[in-house]
Image (cartoon, rainbow, N blue to C red):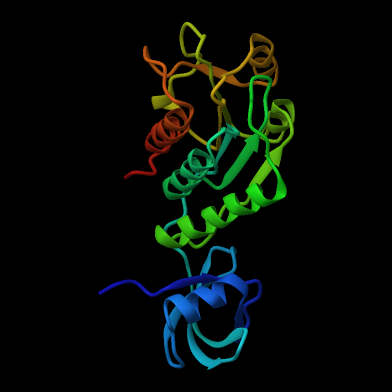
Length: 239
């Protein structure tokens, strides 16, 4: 039996309204009718079981019948900060996989060697990808995707994390044993051009530990997903 279809809404009480893209998907793609049972999400970590009670031209009314706390959120707070890539599909791939792996915050930044540029439409698209990935992997929340105009801003946004990991391709050895980390963790991975020496030093000054990703040079999208998976495993999220 397939799981109930899931939708994000802005406000949930005894009733809720499904509007915009979520409504269009429910009505025109899934063709839900009155009486259909679905799961509603408001990014609070709760899951609301609801029944479609009325379908109008541009919205759908649902009655909430049950509320439960989602069971698939990661226990540990993990943040992924990655350099914006030239290929839009690769950025979407990183966001999608980070959400599936349980990341709670995603930051995208421009750095010294970046050659791609962000705009409002691209950021909105990444946020939509995060929501769709959350629904697909049955999470109760969708991480907010934030954009930082430079690496410095991105680094400073995560200084409160217990572990701050900076993937550095020219580091000779890792300054932290990934298999032994505990607590909240921020991960930083660069774009196609990597980081400059000055950026690496700035990260170190802010408390970030340099780590290597082995002997081979990884593509930026591979590095982001691989390092996130390793961190999640080390923190016990795969048990």
